[in-house]
Image (cartoon, rainbow, N blue to C red; front, side, top):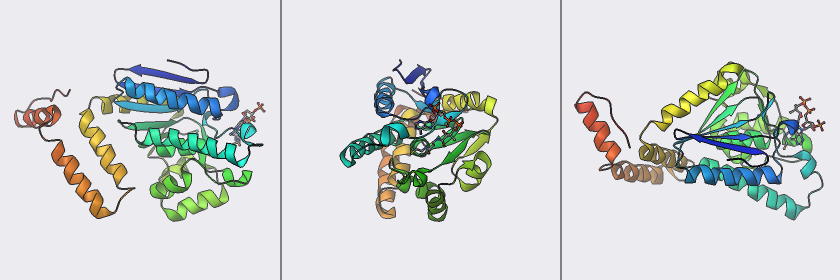
Length: 257
Ligand code: COA
């Protein structure tokens, strides 16, 4: 499926969503953000078991919100834009399967925030990431002030946001902003393999794991632990639980649903 600036490809349970606006380094204007929202819904309807987000072209993952579009926004217009950006990031974060950001180049501002909303981030050696909003006279507006400190810790998040630092892939790995760095020409294949391995895992259990991990950011530890107990016991009796354990005991490969 495709929109003017977004491509969605679903194959063997893996949905790959590509922001396709390379002449603007995949910057997210209103139309592109709205298309991402629709593409995420389509991927969910298509029963995707893993989601990959990436950017078209050789230079950028997503170079951020569209600065040209934003420059003259009024406060109510900016609020509507922020709400859409938040809806998109939330839809990625709560997507019912693991989401991987294949960070193939620049990921600034809203682009970095889109990657932050994913479950996992793999960067190419050419990636450069940053919450650069401060130098535009604003702050991260699509979740960065909340998701960044949870991922990299408060001190590093404050440094990144206050200085608007642009960090290369090596520093991003050191900060914990990405989980892995691979050679640029291997990124797509590497992430496709990860996604396909995830798509072969028990989907319902993966979704439960994602929900429980997400809950850790939302609740007290006691409430989170209670949630984990419910999720864990709720998986008993599912096909994949019965099959996964039977296969182990019978010393054979499992066949998941
Ligand atoms: N919004 C709108 N347009 C953008 C954009 C953005 N976030 N990022 C890049 N573009 C446009 C450029 O204006 C340029 O347009 P032009 O060809 O009409 O001049 C085109 O994309 C190519 O970018 P350019 O700056 O020429 O490429 P570069 O390789 O020299 O630099 C960046 C790339 C990413 C370092 C630089 O474009 C940049 O700093 N962008 C802004 C990043 C940012 O602050 N994002 C956060 C927004 S909240």
